[in-house]
Image 1: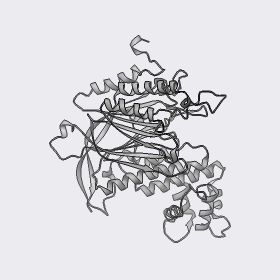
Image 2: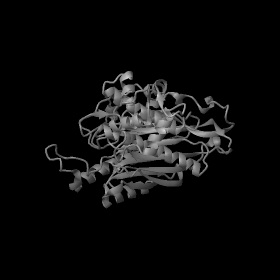
Image 3: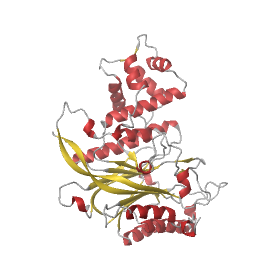
Image 4: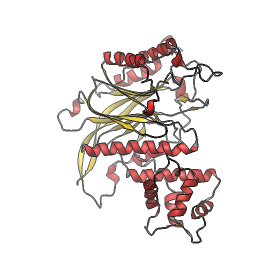
Length: 453
């Protein structure tokens, strides 16, 4: 390997990755590009220094955490992304917070930090560069759940409008979300993680309605603590979101083994860090429909884990009912037994009723075998539907008008260290237990349809 292609794993910026990002921007000189980086930087309060003594943490050794975070900042400032989303940012340490805010601020970034609830010590930091964006609004979302997780929402506008769109009224705004979902320590937490994503999407939807926003691109960044095989991934796909890294490398939903981004505390490697993109012309199901399909998908997965066939599953839901149908009481009891309800972080009574309404297609108060097959057993989140624009929706019951909007094409995406792009975790990488993901986007004008109210 040539000398200028080497990668110094202990904190220096990957020249391979930086070259790929820089070359992507040089290759499109007439298309203004923005870059977005997401990185879980491993809070010192969680970084173990000894396998034998689990209580020995980096946070007790200032020299260690200070040096590592200085190297993290060096790499971020060298790459100089337009948007930086960090997770496990040690908000509880004033010296570290001041260091990040000073160095990022001096480099032209506007910084927004948010700690997890109940003083957990870490949180989120989102930084946007003033050369690229004007911040319109900033919001904080507190999940108030067992993981004390949070999310940030930034509503920004391109500071220098793309030259080809300067003379029209095309909206050049973006919604950016940064979050860190709960780790699935056991199966009961799967519904909590799915719930966290549902809350984010509900919040984004309500924000758009509150400010009467025209269609605009949405980026969801962060550590999602789940792979491409999980329910969260399928839920987001059903809402039209695409994984930017997979788009850049032309990977399909089935290519879960191609790359990794995290070495977890159990010693497993997996791909959990994503920058999701939803362009304004993408098809979107009703959020509540996607949500019910995702929960029913989890429901079916639990039944299959118990080795239940379709007939067994129907009998399980029927319980002691003599008829060939499922009652609401039987449905609720099955959800409780599968740990989807019955605990403080499970589905609420109202959400359970909403699921029942989705399952009871004809509204006669029971779910027969056909409805069970259609809505529960064969429910699909239809994650490929986002390949079609909203032009394909049935217009019989509504009237639409055409508008132009700014969306983004994905020009490139790079993970550092480079070994993770081949599905391997390098032993000599010490910046974090997560890889850094950077994506290059180029704004493009696209038609979209607006419902005329």
